[in-house]
Length: 607
Ligand code: F6R
Image 1 (cartoon, rainbow, N blue to C red):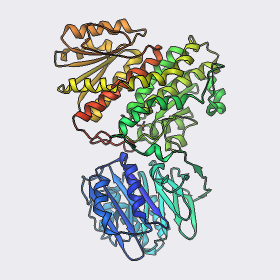
Image 2 (cartoon, rainbow, N blue to C red):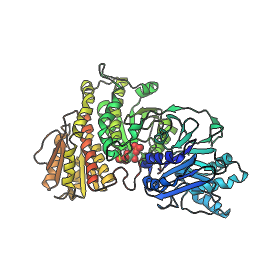
Image 3 (cartoon, rainbow, N blue to C red):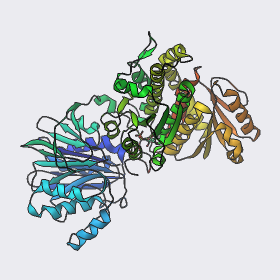
Image 4 (cartoon, helix red, strand yellow):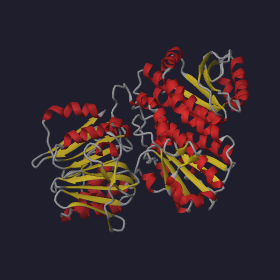
């Protein structure tokens, strides 16, 4: 995790670094720091806490420097202290660097360097790299010393480095952690994602694993692989994120802004990809693999957290409509299994960030075995998009709150489109194709209707605020939504909440039920409605407090939140919205740090 940003150019780097760090804060926010330099001085400031604290400290100090580095940390090696915060430096205080990732062999390297009289001030793996460069810098060749040091480390990393003695130069390198180069007019920026880059330019170069980039004010940019030392051409892309997408506007939190953007995320994901007159898909991005897709006989979906729940939804969908053997697997488990892929398997990886290390590793294993892979990804140019065979980009726009909301809606929208596409190319007659097209068209409006009733959910959260435990139950398509409701409450309200397939409660979980145990039951009028209602009865018989989310009223529930009628596969688009709102308001009443919940980070790039 951790967010990194480095700048070299003609402006005062401090302002860009601070604004960039605020945009990267979702990646980690336990401590932060900046270093900048003008011709004379080096200014280094670190702070435990948020970027706003650091900003307060440096704001009135008239710091100036055309080169600088900034870092926001999610601690891995070493506690949350100023010493462990980045930027880190060597003994001579010439080499300064920021790091995202883990150097796995840092202990061994540290011991060697100690024997060569290097003194360490922190407990981090990152500091070791500064000393390693220093060790090789004895020959005064900065570029070469970084190259040699890179060859000695193992793990995953993105670095940006500068050297006090060569202040016209910034060096970046990456392996398994993201790093993007922004090319402005006589200015350069290196960052973990496009959001700080959009401060100065739309022109970006996505670095690949094994890339090292040297940015020189006078000589321009050079990219080469530190693995084979071959130079690479600069491939420049344009980022299309708008600055307004990243602003909080008048919202108190990004999370509520992003929940309110759920209808737009669904609409933007489907509208160019469906032809409503011809009842056809338009998934141009899959054209090149159409033939291979026609022959697949099994689908494996993999991801982590909320994106994994989208996979579960996909499994029900593909089984039901395509009659295809489908499985949803948690990526951190899949990667250690000897999974029986074959030439007729399609792997679908789902990720908002496109950087989640477990998902990335699971896909690398499948790739080595020549499995056909499609990514359903939100962040353009992210690491996963560069490894899969084809990408279906979800059009949720930047998601900055740590808890994922609108991206989930965009993911399940993409799965519906992919399901229709697979039916088309495999010649499967979809049972209710016309209704599917009609319903998806109006689903954003139905979501909006629910959001417009957010005060009802707020009131529900107020009424339930004294409870400390919650169950979320659902069957079939509603089971992934139950999991999503429970995870959101855990993540941002720090509450004990668990989800079960509704039919499973009587095999154990029901033992906990009494009048102090509220249970959310997701029971829209779908194919398993009556079965779920029987489970509701069982809970009620044991005095459980029931919150029913359904398009049907039911007098035995203590509270009913009515949703509009829909098709079975689209009910999840509706039942998930009140659960997102509930977690938001519950956490808000408890005064939690909603956008930056404790112990979490948005982009999980450590194992
Ligand atoms: C939950 C949440 C996480 C992510 C998970 C995967 O609200 O945000 O569970 O869904 O870490 O992240 P991505 O989708 O970026 O791979």
